[in-house]
Length: 109
Image (cartoon, rainbow, N blue to C red; front, side):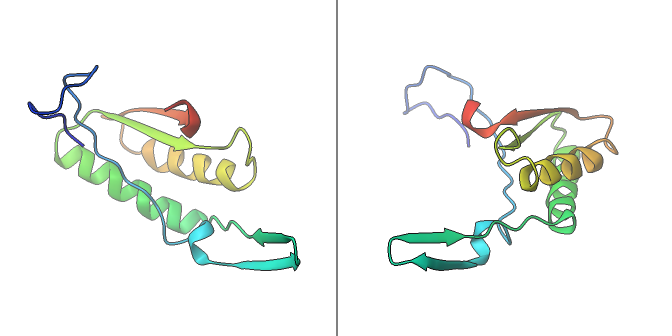
């Protein structure tokens, strides 16, 4: 995501890369009808898929000479699933000391 001259903005210099792991989570489509008025979806997070996405992000950021990485999550609410996601991503990011890594609750971004 980059700002451009023909799009006025409060933030004139925007230059973001966004990586999203979407091979699992709610995208697996594991859902059911609990009763006629209630639908339920199952959120699945694995260490492996998270590590794969985090490693790819860190490698590309390093290759492109980028310095800052934010891990966006909802572990404030989804303590188990997004907690695992955050811990797994942080463990991979720790292997890249050249990156300044922080975590942010997605709703605050």
